[in-house]
Length: 210
Image (cartoon, rainbow, N blue to C red):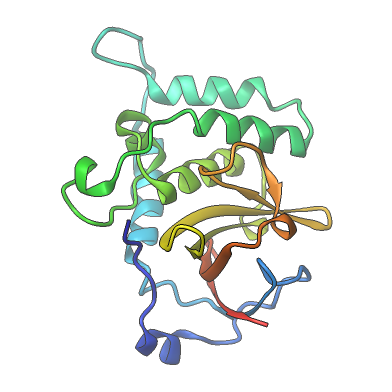
């Protein structure tokens, strides 16, 4: 699949010291350069805006053959795991979201790259960044801070393709929620990914190999 990433021009003009570097080591053993300028990432900011509108407008729902009540089902699932530990919640969200079918954007949306909101993902399934977005929003509603989560766009060196995962900073570890790996796993155990950039609601980070 193709994933939108920052051009060389944007790398030169968009980086600024507006975000302090995380106290954690760079994801997948990289050095990070931060920026608060999210304007080039219109697909991500579009997801944030569209999700906020959809989440606010979704009212009470009565399940029927034509109405799956995705919001209620999602919130019921999140309610069911609220009492769990943070690590258990990561595992539950990983398992639940990975049950969706992987479908390429060109088949789902008729374009090479489309970033879907969780509600769109629940209706039509999706590809790697859609899994990551749904996990991000699920954990956010569970109370995980945005600054402890990032969607990471990377190169899968084994398959030779672009990919996206969710990274979550938990205690002293960077945990990875990946639709290609069934279990939540420490980033230290993954050696075939080369991150290009990572992003959350507060900014983005360019990654370089150390």
